[in-house]
Image (cartoon, rainbow, N blue to C red; front, side, top):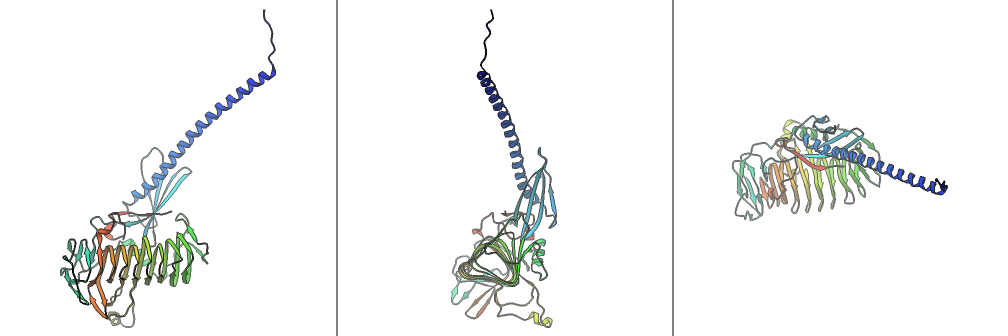
Length: 430
């Protein structure tokens, strides 16, 4: 016998409610699983895109395609990613921008590029003018040296003779009558930047905000131009160029990072700390206790001057101020460069490195260097000069120290023609 029972409505509602909860949980689980798989694939794609930007930079270093052109990097992979590398200059440093794209996912990385010596970095390269180089006082050269056939000799200045056991703490090689050549691209870039008609491309602003400027290298370059510029109580970072038609003065209160300064004269006052490039056509002065971090560059390109007859250009000059003057306790990490096209005989230094000043990197000078301080790295020069008590000592180093063994083997610096096939990343930008 069948007994009919009524099921309470509350019980049915409870069953339906539990069923709905179970269904929602199952759907949530399926959705979570799908979302997790989707994001996992998305993450894999993003990671691979990031890797491809690095790969693009590395692969492009083996090729010197034209400045301003884009190089497509080909690599067979499961995920189809298009990678292009653009080659430009930032100041006197080569810049490469790698862009990797997959669908709607893209990423860009920008780097500064320099040259690295394939063999041991020399301490000195002195042009061969058929005369010996004289060292006096506490001078010391550690590392390999390219010297004239007459080599090194001991000297005496102010009664201070050379007092070490060896003239050279390294191997000696014979130099040529000209300095190692810059790469064609770097030479061309310096010519462009120091041309009076050069106009940098970018967004021109008419005032510098007291709040400062921070501009990514993925954005358009910001340019500030004026007749004379004094940088004080301001922070400038990144893709920024400051141009003056007469002079730029940098005070210690200014904070400059990776920016480019361009003017006929640039004065970096006492106590300035930063990382930047200063490019001039007449002179650069660096005051005491300045600290310019790697990679910084001080570059002056002086064009040939034609005054009066051709004979006037051949007269010796005695009272010129240094083209680049590094005062006491200055530290420059990067390179210092003077290219002077004048054929005038000079009895004053183009680069003067005072006592206690130090360059960690390279000095490249087509005229004379006066070295009282030290260089951890290399000096390439046409000659040395020492000015003491009103006397001029040609091809002398007095108390100066050069030591290439102090420079890191990973140092990346000047783009010489001999280093074109051995380019490395100098700095990752932002």
